[in-house]
Length: 104
Picture (cartoon, rainbow, N blue to C red):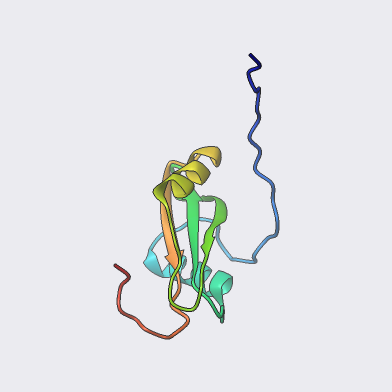
């Protein structure tokens, strides 16, 4: 029997310009969301991974969906948070239809 020896790695794909890497309030998070999501034509779900001082370690795309849905499984959210060595997380999600009602 062979046992697989594996290694996980975080790869930087791109950077987004933002004044402060620290999240101090919900407005700070919303500003990052507008930069990342912009005018996306489908639903996208991000997890923002933060250190103990709410500094951003990483931002990950968890799911890219359709116009009306984005499938998100907790396993995918927490896997990224653990790999990024996060103390806390926040989530970003858009509704391209313009509907402002919370998702179920």
